[in-house]
Length: 151
Image (cartoon, rainbow, N blue to C red; front, side, top):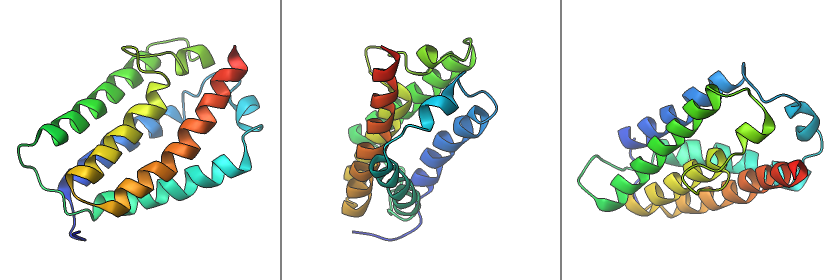
């Protein structure tokens, strides 16, 4: 395991944060109503996972080399960006926010978690892998519950 700064991790984090910053101005209608009912346990997993993923992505030692695993992780992040573009071109409803993308359920929650998990495997960073799993429990769990409320 390597604790060196990772430009790859920084690129992934930029791809993660830019649409999320834009989202703060274009949240789905009634999102506050759903977020008020979030499980405190899932929220704790999400927050802890977010902090750990940021730290261990930046310092996972991953470098740009040809690797099918890195390519798949990057493609997942590109799909994530496209899913955001689709949302930003919608009516900003909860249904738009949670709409499947290329048969991927909850793409705005699932795709980045999978990408960072694969980045952890690629970088041989057990800490990033574990951080991604903690994030997955909270982030995907919260959004799964929101989507269930829609149905």
